[in-house]
Length: 280
Image (cartoon, rainbow, N blue to C red; front, side, top):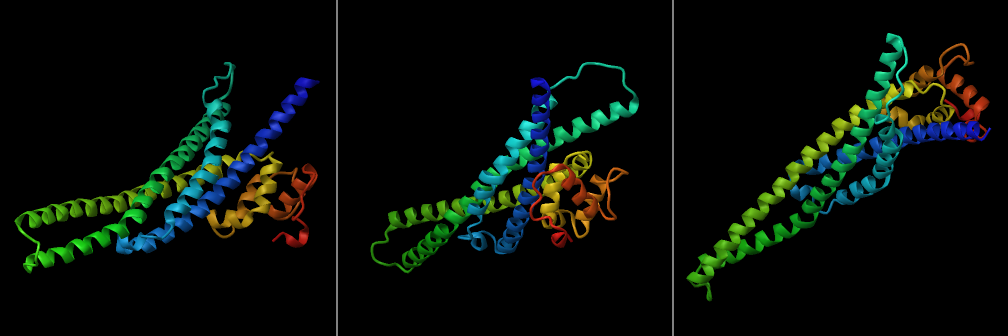
């Protein structure tokens, strides 16, 4: 009896983890897209456009909050299963292909999500370098330029030794300016890679979620977060996804939302906020 209860608890816990992973991914996707849009808008003028933008703080909050939670969830859900070898047994081609699909989806999600998390750390550091040092570099460049003009005009106190020192400072200023440009370029590359990985993860999440048709907790969370689903997958996607999850003779209702609502009512104890008048 205890073994059965433990199995039921573990099964429910896995359903919850899958649901949390999907919703957290949707939130991270939307948050990152907002950051990316602001980055592209501000970076049109290079480092000065990004200086004091506060983007590095937004990336830090995303990485240390949802990004970290998502990475830990993915490792918990998929990393142990990736290393598990099931006992051999006679199986048909369809079962073998289904198992291969599941393994590849798990491995992809674990890899994609983990890589995005670490790239966010690099993006945060690049933006910090730009926002912290770019304004100071501009001030230093202006000051060095002003002093050089005085030196060229033969101002008092500017002998050959002082002029040589100013030239060395100007050379160092050039190196610092190049580092700032390199930081902007690195931020562009890392941000673009994050966008690619998030798009790839969204596709895998869609396929992975479609196989979780007996997960009432996932269905409930998708119902509660239809606005996020549509922001990630486009207009009408919430209905399409719920239709995929709640298909078959066991589900009652004309639309995907109606079938999903009936499904969670029959399985979940708390469906507050999902009254018929609030379901569109």
